[in-house]
Length: 246
Image 1 (cartoon, rainbow, N blue to C red):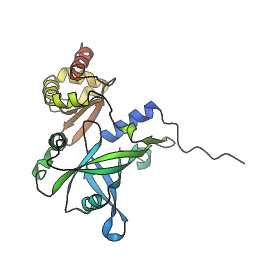
Image 2: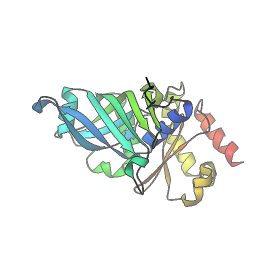
Image 3: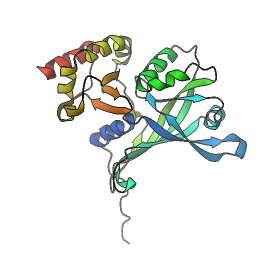
Image 4: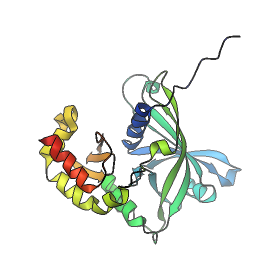
């Protein structure tokens, strides 16, 4: 009897790194929930996507929205995000992440950090972010399916998408200072981006720093750039840019 073909490739570090990059560089995602008023019929919407300091995806949603009401009734959800481009849409990398949604109250100590990180990524959200019916959710990943293109499918755990560095809290505390320093030295930033630096002008702004890399925004354009290695503390971030630039 012939063996069944292997659909999934072995998940290695390269696949994990690419999956994290593809996911974190997206500005929005489709979110699937179970609608409570229709006996759990699937409901899909679109949400702006952000990420906390530990790379947990976050969304901001109105409690008037169907998907918000669904998440408050049943925390299970799936998020689909991916790249687009010319040709067959299925030739481009995409990732589906199954999550458990955690609503974040305004009294939660994490709320201020989520608000600041989300606004730097999506400045137009300033128009409604403080409306009383809006709230943040952390979408804690449980497992994921990553397709990097035809014949390149991988199964990932939730932890494969997260940052577990001991430096997270220190970097979060120093993030404002790090952003000011990086945005004031565009030459070093341009050098860090290497071959991708040709279109990076002073108009680009670093909007987030974590233990694995930085986020950059210019208008509606967005870019994620990973460090060569995970940093150990805020000074390690500074030293990396100085070393790379010199």
